[in-house]
Image 1 (tube, helix red, strand yellow):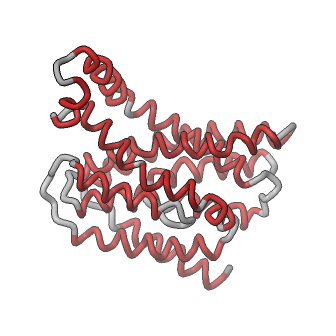
Image 2 (cartoon, rainbow, N blue to C red):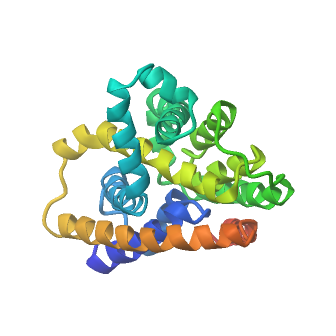
Length: 270
């Protein structure tokens, strides 16, 4: 892969990881259109996902620091972690986020090979984009009550994230949409979605680590991976901010139109 392919795909990853248009689907389509298949799919996907992971860690560093502080302080407080899981606060949010990652983790472990076999299929990604578009349009029907995340909503959002393992299904679109249907405040739904991406990305990286060690990219491919990762990090920060602004204005469904157009036109011309 030449350097500008990696740069372009890193930008695509950074923007589409958090904007609800499916990062994996766009990477599959982008590599197909560019003919950029010389880098192993797993290597590039993991590298650029680590870039967007850095975006979340930086943007939500205060929330993460609060979770760490309260987790540590609960070690020495009456009731400890059990009490903290029942009380509103950073520790309860951490527990709910970890709980919500279980469905996606289970799917990733059980159907790892089946999912990987679809990562280079543009047609699968296009059908996924169509499904994402319909889901995003449906969020216009979601009630707006401004609830805080709870056990039921965490499980529902976790199931939505598990479905989003499929190419073309937007992780942020699925999870934020599920949060809205669970009557969460839009900003809380987005924050929960972004925070729960952290263990999922880390888990995927751990599963891929043996393959990357056994077949590490070298030379130009290694440099391309670094460039793509940096681009994904920078544009991931931008995408988080853009989505939060659009959610505040009630514009999430606009991305549904884009996904339907992209998926439909892609199936016609690919």
